[in-house]
Amino acid sequence: MEDMGGNGKWMSTLYAFHQAGAMIRLFKVKEKQKELAENANGGSPIKKQTAGELRLHKDISELNLPKSCSISFPNGKDDLMNFEVSIRPDEGYYVGGTFLFSFQVSPTYPHEAPKVKCKTKVYHPNIDLEGNVCLNILREDWKPVLNINTVIYGLYHLFTEPNYEDPLNHDAAAVLRDNPKMFESNVRRAMYGGHVGQTYFPRCM
Image 1 (tube, rainbow, N blue to C red):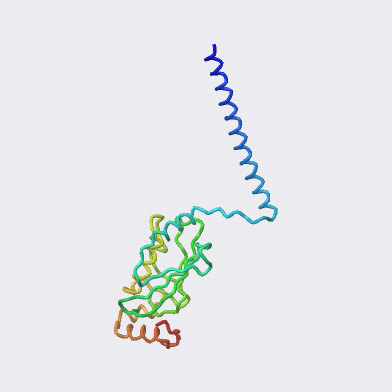
Image 2: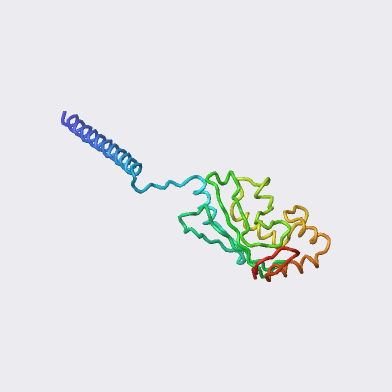
């Protein structure tokens, strides 16, 4: 009988702990509801990361860039979705130049490619004078398995091997196709700060 009584006390104690645990959980839920209500009434908002931000954070933490490429966050690390990438080619027509790109990443990333623009005015067959970039992985060939590292390498590749077959600047593409020596001369003139035809390019060396 004593064993039964002991078991009964043990069961009563276990039930009491269970009830206490339930009360603590309920208290935490109520505290969370209160916190959310306070935020809705003008308190400091709680910033919940989107799936896109979480994926982008992973991409950035795993970046493996060549020394000629660097990334910066003009708005601070709290705004990962908008950043800049600087590319300084170490070979090819554009060697010695520095080219700055802005990246704007959607909350739906990686299901949508980042929006990339070149902030440096450049004489290039695949970049127009407004900074729009013609890169297949930013358009029809984008897939969610690709990442920011892939895009930066793609941009770097545009400077080491510009492509006249898929142009945004048709004049530059035609010169590259028909007269590579003149194209090289035009690139150097533009990078040192000067006119190519009627268009002025600020120095980017």
